[in-house]
Length: 263
Image 1 (tube, rainbow, N blue to C red):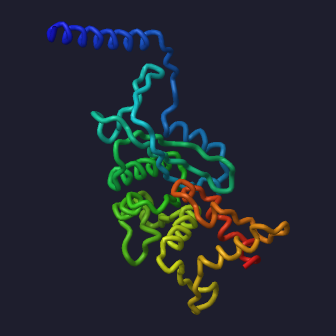
Image 2: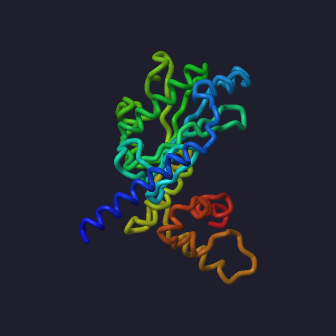
Image 3: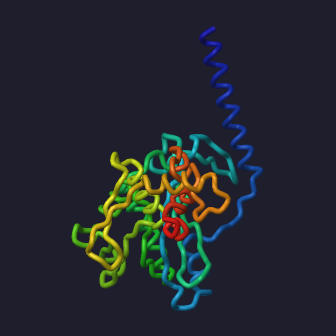
């Protein structure tokens, strides 16, 4: 019975292999431009001032799985091929003074690492350079892996927001965290403070002020039953669930002009 089970297993495995080979024979492979050739085509259509690009990095969690498409089996992690990918590292390039943006990398990875992400970004910057496009800015969220990636790129404690460009030594490469995640970070830190208060410097002033979360709660409570409301605060804004804390809309309503005016 044991030998029969082994034979059955291998016969099923061979059948899978035959199926993949058959699919590859039937699949039509279209010729495609390389990344550099594609970027060159784009660069030729841009004005000089638009040949400056912002590189945006993000990650997406995915369910480990395999998929066959176009003669290729997808789903294995590029950073650790024996493993299935649990995340996708996405890199987008946005060209200044235009609406043009392209996804230049979608890499399935098992686990994000700062050194691996650094290598990917340097490779993308190199491709932009070969296409006569200057990659001036990198934008990520404030995830610890992204912070570590910036460290691997060579930022110092004196200038955490820029480094010497690895491909243009006399020009800066700016390392930024995007405003959406900064808003959520401030809101989340504010909520999780035991006293519900955070201190900040007022604009164009050296005076320290204190923001009190209970003021927002009081505003929501006073307007909840009113027909005429000055703010758009909801229960989800005041007491967001963990999944809602990932939605920037709930954080935006805390800091928007209407809420400021209502307070």
